[in-house]
Amino acid sequence: MTRPPVRTAPTGAVYFSLLGPLTARLDGHELPLGPRKQRLVLATLLSRPNTPVPVEVLTDAVWPDDPPRTARKNLQVYVSAARTLLGPAGHEGRDRVVHGCGGYLLRIAEGELDTLRFGSLARAGRAAAGRGDLAGAARLLREALDLWEGPPLNDLRDSAGVAEEAGRLEARCLTVYEDWAETEIELGRPAVAVDGLRDLVERHPLRERLRAAWMNSLHQSGRQAEALAVYDDYRQLMARELGLEPSPAMAALYRSMLGRGREARRPAPARDAVGPAAPPACTAAFTGRPGELRELLEVLGCGEERVVVVSGPAGAGKSALALRAAHLLADRFPDGRVRVRVRREDGTARSRAEILAELGRLCGVAGNAAPPGNTASPEGGAGGDRAATAALADAWQEWQARHRALVVLDDVPDEASVRGLLSRSGKCSVLITARGQLAGLAPVHRIALPALADGEALELLGKLIGAGRLRADPGAALRIVRACGGLPLAVEVSGMRLAVLRHLPLAEYADRLDDPSAALDELVAGDVSVRHRIASGWQDLADGDRWVLGRLAGLAEDGGFTLDRATEALGCGERAAIRAVESLIDAGAVTSPAGEVTAHAALYEVPRLLGLYAHEREGV
Image (tube, rainbow, N blue to C red):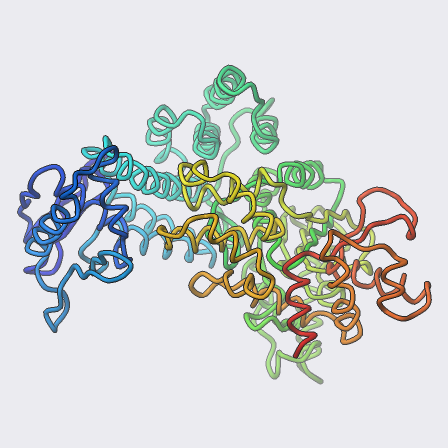
């Protein structure tokens, strides 16, 4: 990485940098930070800005093996020195470092710390990519990367505590670099990323996303033989070091490059509006789902299936899987990949006119202006509005007939919302995500997302709380992911919460989640709430289905229920019970065996967290 120009905080304020060696500058001049132990305390506080840092964490960072009896007094001296260095905060002259029951909290603004500025720029870049503004995304992500001066805190990594924080920061930097490189490739500028990707792959040889971006940048620069060699080196490394093959997604990328000469890569059109967009309300990198991802790539990549439905309950990771597949299938759809949400932010369905207008805007369809009048009407209103909607629908069908694109219709509430949007002819494919199975759509290829396997859920949790903390109490970690029912959103929220509450033992948090009356209250991180997402799915159910689910949720507490038990709980005949259970299966609220089995022999299940929410509603 080339060293960026020195960035300064507002006049009179100290600017700290962790993305490289620990440094502090005042009006452009570097400040002395004192002896090593004092720098370790400062680095640990800066690594968790505006968050209480327990005294035990600071002690472990400075004295990992055998802290002296005077450790707390020594920490007070180091913190006092930090206060002097930092100066007052805010217009009221408040202390920068305050001590409370949660530990020491350092107050610092975005313009005074490079990691805060880095995070702000990265979020803005990803938001721009989600809007389809790839040029703006590339600029913002590059600005974030220019803050990266080398391995974070590379002068203090002999402290295990600081090394763990530094590793987490480096992982964030690598993820942003991958986002930036992939965006540049999408823009048709692969050459700008080649050299940096090569250097990073040499330092992180097993990081697959980096290697895939390097392969793509080489291939799109006309260096096909080198791109194929990158894959071959990776395959041999995986076999030698781990005894594994590359992932199905990586293998699919390799196969897509075989037998091709250089293909001119035009700049990505404005309609290619998938890019590296993140799944809604989720922050972690895509994890798990290897079988489902492989199936999606094979089905959509071969070009024979034109409509695929990915179904699963709220928070199952449907959008994340769809976006990951869309990203990896870029070469299969030269006319773009488009993602449109079929619901509004409040969970209500968007009108067909609204969706068609957005598709038209993204794809450059003639007549793509929003129809006049009340677009909230399912058909765009009466008279001229209906005619405008019909014209948009015809123009959309004509565009699909002449192009090869992938359209992701995300969070579809019902069949009626998308029937008029599916291609009648041509080579466009449509990837639908929905909570229910949309049984009224045919012919389609269906993929139902089950709960994450224990190993996948633990991997996701470890990415958020750190592998070291996971290994310290693997039994409690397993209890946490099982209490989450293997629901990706719940596991992710648990990880985000534990990443902030670093003092909280995993076993204590597992106890909280095991308590049925408290589990949903614990699954909140900032503005991300599992209860809120489950409530949205609950609202999708018909009134009768909600009543049935409330009755069946109690049967599922011991692992599942049979049709006989459902018949008894519902107080109805066998046929009525079968119809009631199958209605919930269709809605995604009850799971059934994957293989063929008679209704009487089947063991049905209600996902744990949905069952807890149903109990709450039953008591209202």
